[in-house]
Amino acid sequence: MKTTTGYSGIQIALHWLIAILIPLAWLSSGGAEEAWDGLEKGVVPGFVPHVALGIAVLALVVLRLAVRFRRGAPEAPGVPGSLAVKASTWGHRLIYLLMIAVPLGGMSIWFGGMDNGEIHGLFANVLMVVVLGHTLVALYHQYVLKDGLLRRMMKAE
Ligand code: HEM
Ligand code: HEM
Image (cartoon, rainbow, N blue to C red; front, side, top):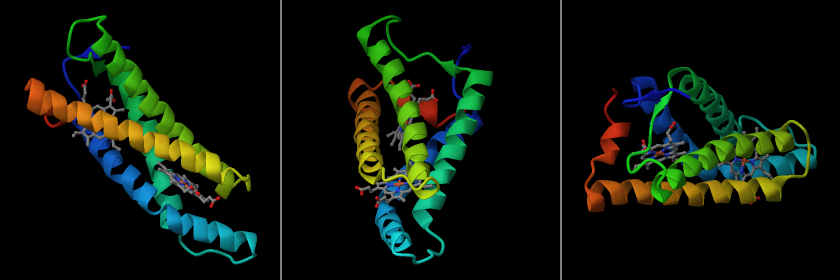
């Protein structure tokens, strides 16, 4: 993958848009559970925000990965090969994996009729915890290490 000096405008826009949609999808899951319960009893559901939000996340993540593979991304700041840089690379990979797996799991329930609710919920919760850790690390860089990391996701380069 190409190494760039910074994230592009589209990469930054997608990062923040997805960062808003994932918590909204998580918070709206109660509605999906109700709709799913209803469906099992033969009640045809109307618009289910959770399903729309989750599918939007998947579509935007696919777009984001396509942009990333075409354009590349900056290397994690720090000593190349160090534990911190490796943790960053693998942490971001894990987030991408979960951002794909969680909506696909949801779709397997909603469209595939598979009884995967518990696994889907578990992986969604893992995603939220990982993303919380990611946020804390970003804030630690910005306010404790004071290395201006947040700028990378604010200003296109
Ligand atoms: C649901 C919420 C979030 C998700 C799913 C997410 C996901 C990601 C991913 C996958 C990357 C790697 C970028 C790439 O190469 O494409 C990234 C980078 C980054 N994120 Fe987030 N993020 C979230 C929330 C946040 C928040 C709340 C902050 C700040 C407080 C933040 C700050 C950053 C920064 C500064 C980078 C660049 C790190 C670097 O270049 O090494 N993110 N994020
Ligand atoms: C980032 C995306 C998503 C997140 C964070 C997420 C999160 C969650 C959570 C936390 C639950 C509650 C599970 C439980 O403990 O019972 C849930 C349930 C559910 N989700 Fe998602 N979800 C996402 C995407 C999707 C998608 C794309 C679909 C369908 C197209 C979907 C369909 C469902 C359904 C049908 C349930 C109810 C399952 C049941 O009651 O057994 N989700 N989701």
